[in-house]
Length: 251
Ligand code: ADP
Image 1 (cartoon, protein in one colour):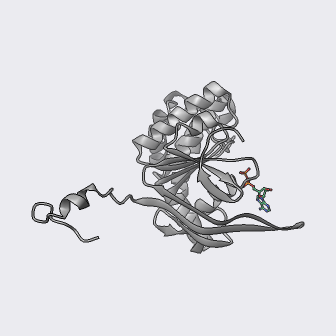
Image 2: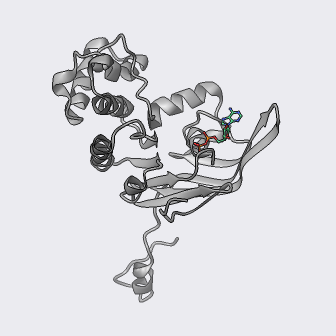
Image 3: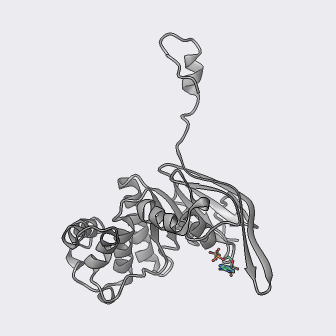
């Protein structure tokens, strides 16, 4: 769009009322995903589209088996689409080689899963430091950075505990710190509170929202918890292979 000098140009008033073009962190168009299975082809989506603006926290709801996790995996370059365009954080993820996809994930994406997947033989601090050491940071610096992240998630006094010595909510907080330690742009969360009781789930979600806001993240959260979905910027329902604005009524 041509830049308008508002002092000199009478059309500027009209221009000024136009909404700001929003920066899109996720742009998906014409997405198809078909799995070839022993029982034939299984098409989860065909011509699916999705746009997520910078700073949005979008919930994706839908019945089990609708393809929510698969969609999240495609957004995070953990799975490849059958066809379509998938642009995430300015990168065409569908076109990445395996090696480039791995670098992209480390740099741009923080994942949180339903299960924490912390390594049981390492302390909370070491688990959080792991992605930094994987990028070549020295152990001393990585542990220092990890300690700050544990503090952010309210677990500064649990750094020396192993995952088995932490509660479910605490484990998920450590997993969130680990997801964010590389300062990603995008947070992808797959049923992040699905394994927690409702009070703990609410608290972990509070933390997720706080981290989202404090760190300028763009987040996509798959959840079957309608109350939590309603707390996001918007909710979309994955239904019959399409994303539709989410009625949060249980279907
Ligand atoms: P949701 O997260 O909505 O429960 P999923 O994305 O996990 O759904 O799975 C959607 C469907 O795709 C399911 O029927 C599942 O069995 C199937 N599916 C997932 N991954 C594969 C795969 N690698 N090969 C074949 N089918 C798969």
